Length: 482
Ligand code: BG6
Image (cartoon, rainbow, N blue to C red):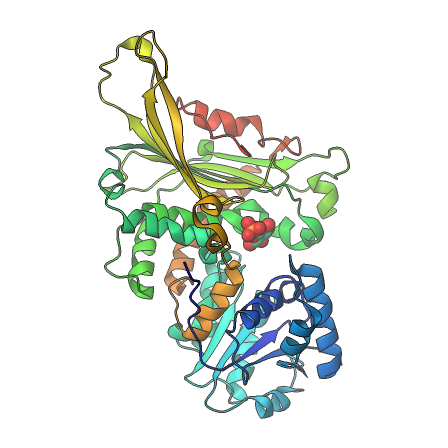
């Protein structure tokens, strides 16, 4: 198999927050990798925008340092030096008048322009307004915004209204980087590219679905943001919600942006309100060498959750009665993101009561070690009767595809989609609002009850109550990290 690079037109990518953490960790390394793959044709430029007085040379030094620090395999110095020739810098005061004219003078008329707002959401509106006022936003311009997209439904609506004042919806790219992950897209390929699964993909054959996104990291240096967000706003409302949509949605007629997003929206709108006893919130405690959540965020009375587990339902014909169990948390046992579709038992066992209960499970492993496993029931080898066991039909992408499995990072794909003008993997305004409309009452509920998250030991499965949530229904979570 030969890797195919789809050429893109020359572009100017302008990064507001060009010296910030996300630019250093994700955006610039992703661009460098695309440059090495030949996808940043020579007149293309990356223009960093920030408040400091760096100049091109100073910014290039910063970019070089960021690449060396954050690339898994840093490119050799000559590749980095060649990349840096396409990097520029403009000092702009995003809340004042300084720098906008210089930025305008730099941009090449007629070339694709993408303004990447890698800044806090409180600045989105101001920057969009000033881009318009400076005459920088033409019909070929795109604006890219990072999460968090709002804090609740009202703030998300306000942001959408603000952006809509200056850009058409078709120019706005709301990033949820989970949608750029290779295996997340594979979910659609597996569902809609095979005949095998779709006939069984419904309440009649599926017992339940589990989605787990477990991390070992704590909140790191992001305590101030995280303590206002918590796992619900930071992960559940966006990343897990998107995974749920891709698992539960109806087949879109085409793989095009609105067809896909229409179907995802219907799923979010069909989500039932979550009962208070179907929500478990947790907060990690200190362990050997790591601080507790409250120490990490510097708030010894914090009631913010670093773990959340939820049981919910999608109320439509396909999924009526099928529970969806979702959980995510920090400082868990392992970094492990997986979706498991657990099929029902066969309706009748011809092998008698001693053969035990068996069912099929399809697990989509998102990270690490992307792959797909289908558990099937077979006869235990050997003489002595018909004993059944479950064995995995295991497809690790790394083994099956070799170097082809080396997928680009989510940001590489998403940035190139912005340049190509493909919005399929970005969230639409109504989708984000619907996700908040489902999330808001859940958060308001626990705030009204004065709910305090349950402490859990770091590097475990989270609070014991999360196990009870699913065990009460006679089910078990798939283990984290195996
Ligand atoms: C981000 C969250 O959106 O996703 C972080 O803000 C989280 O808290 C991160 O750690 C997880 O992303 P990934 O790609 O490492 O699974």
